[in-house]
Length: 479
Ligand SMILES: Cc1cc2nc3c(=O)[nH]c(=O)nc-3n(C[C@H](O)[C@H](O)[C@H](O)COP(=O)(O)OP(=O)(O)OC[C@H]3O[C@@H](n4cnc5c(N)ncnc54)[C@H](O)[C@@H]3O)c2cc1C
Ligand SMILES: *[C@@H]1O[C@H](CO)[C@@H](O)[C@H](O)[C@H]1NC(C)=O
Ligand SMILES: *[C@@H]1O[C@H](CO)[C@@H](O)[C@H](O)[C@H]1NC(C)=O
Ligand SMILES: *[C@@H]1O[C@H](CO)[C@@H](O)[C@H](O)[C@H]1NC(C)=O
Ligand SMILES: *[C@@H]1O[C@H](CO)[C@@H](O)[C@H](O)[C@H]1NC(C)=O
Ligand SMILES: *[C@@H]1O[C@H](CO)[C@@H](O)[C@H](O)[C@H]1NC(C)=O
Ligand SMILES: *[C@@H]1O[C@H](CO)[C@@H](O)[C@H](O)[C@H]1NC(C)=O
Image (cartoon, rainbow, N blue to C red; front, side, top):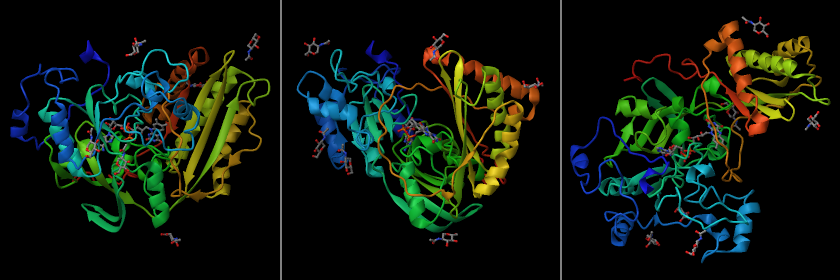
């Protein structure tokens, strides 16, 4: 039973550089379909772990789940438990914790912070051991140990993964969090790119990238959420940002990557070296192809950004009379948003179902490099359309322009129970009236019943065309 936990574990596959001897050295002692699990005879002994630890400068951790303070037993500490529940909001407690995955349910919720625990704190999907890596050598040590002992290997950076891919029961975890190197490179040339760049370690978070921007008067594409990785899962799964319609996705920013592959080698992946790995790492999914150590990414001159927010509420006191008008208003915004994206902008929206078949829609449209008056004029045709369906937007809010690379902080995020599913909607759905209506119908159907079942709809709109991504000349980049 133990081996059938629904926790995702990673089997790293390398591409062109698989070293045959490493593959041949896979032990035969375990059922090849199963990884060795704690308690199995083949599980490494204390002295095996101690040898690993000694070979990686003593950075091996065997952490306890933080919330064990809330459960009966030797770790019980009521004050600490209370702190976990109500005192961490302006701290980095959970973000600096080696085990925590922010989607708590993916770990099995086996040791959550609560004043009324039912049962005991158990390890669930938390890894057994964590390598607190501060160098590529530590990462290589972990990869080699996991491979040679046939144990599960997971990679955790910030733990933001919605599907729990940064935890795994019975695993050795590589924690990239402290690979915090940041460096501004005033002039960098590779292939067809010639311009400013930055090199960032794979533990750097979006807020730290923002601080690097502010310090050097540059723009680097980074997630809107402060504590999402600056590279890691964000870069390798696409990675969107308020400036994505101007500069492309996170994956489009990568110029050269330093990667540890499944055979334990540290390699460079760029348009000329290990091109297939370079291609795969930019969108092939976090943890699928190797462990990123650092990335050289494009940097641009500074830009300012401003946003314009809009909200529609169906209720006696809201600005929308009835549900049909509400959905017409939502459709008007989404249709208009194509113009926002074509102007280099971005949309960030929510549809919250409320009681008695009522709804609230909130959205903000961001415009890089636009002045407030221009943004107000830009949005006016939308307000006119809304007026025609009977929705009056009395005082549209346009924020003031601020530098995109403003200093940011990164505190407060904590484990939650949100479950996400996502769909990528193609631009064609916006080009054709009938297809657009069907798209809106699907969104409406997805939101209906949300109040009773406690879900909502979140739409992010961006247009990372090949042109803005700097990929108009694909020949040298695509293997
Ligand atoms: C509150 C919240 C806000 C978000 N906001 C945004 C947003 O504004 N824009 C956006 O694009 N996305 C956003 N996301 C989604 C986020 O980008 C993804 O969850 C992303 O995968 C997180 O990557 P990470 O490295 O920070 O997290 P992790 O959970 O640590 O890692 C995610 C995946 O990548 C792998 N991975 C991590 N580091 C490495 C590495 N160095 N090498 C190889 N594999 C690695 C992990 O094993 C895991 O599979 C948000 C998520 C949350 C929970
Ligand atoms: C690894 O070694 C360091 C330094 O000796 C030690 O502090 C740490 O407890 C060890 N880790 C484990 C899991 O034993
Ligand atoms: C919790 O652990 C204690 C001590 O190991 C054990 O006696 C008890 O049965 C456990 N409780 C539950 C609900 O599993
Ligand atoms: C991990 O390593 C970093 C950098 O050396 C250190 O600051 C941090 O305290 C370590 N974390 C844990 C939980 O040991
Ligand atoms: C930042 O860069 C811009 C354009 O590259 C330049 O005009 C501006 O003077 C710089 N600001 C500072 C404070 O250096
Ligand atoms: C929903 O409608 C019912 C019946 O009209 C009413 O009693 C209730 O107060 C309404 N709930 C809300 C939250 O408006
Ligand atoms: C799409 O929906 C709008 C608003 O309901 C309607 O006016 C229009 O006729 C529809 N178009 C098509 C092609 O179905």
